[in-house]
Image 1 (tube, rainbow, N blue to C red):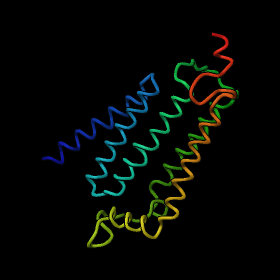
Image 2 (image 1 turned 45 degrees about the vertical axis):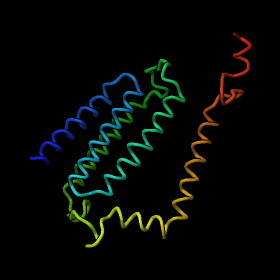
Image 3 (image 1 turned 90 degrees about the vertical axis):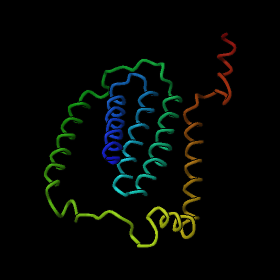
Image 4 (image 1 turned 120 degrees about the vertical axis):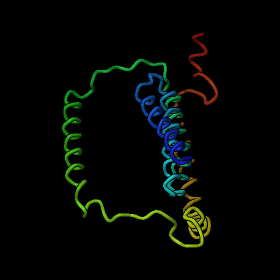
Length: 183
C-alpha cells in the first residue's frame, strides 16, 4: 500500500513539474519545476532498487545541471524580449524533417532485439554490498585522480564561461565604467 501511495505522489510530482516546465512563462520557474520533475524521477529509480541511478539523478541532474541552467538564465537576463523570427529561413522545416526521421528510426529500431539488447535484472552486482558503495569505493580509491581532474576542469569551465559572458569593460562587481558616467 505504501508503494502505491509513493508512486502516486511521485507521478503527480513528475507530471505536474513537466507540465509546469513547458507552460511557465518565467524561465526561472521552469528551471525550478524541472528540479521537481527530476526528483520525482529519482523516486521512481529508488522504487526500482536502482539506488545508484537515483543518486546520480539527484546529484548530477537535479543539482548540477539545473544550477547551470539557472546560472545561464540569470547571466543572460530574463527581462529581455525575444523575437520569434527565424534567423535562418528554412530552419523550422529542416528541423521538422529531421525530427520525423529520428522518430521513424526510433519506431523502426524499438522492436528489434539487436537494437535494444537483452533484458536487464534489478539488484546489486555483488552479494555483500550495494552498487552505490561499490562505485563510491572505486571512484575514491582507484579513480580519484581522474575524478579530481574532472572537478577542476568543470570549475575552470564555469570561470571561463563567466569571463566570456561578461560584457567588455564591465567590472565583476558592478556596472561598466561608462554606465556610471551616464547616470
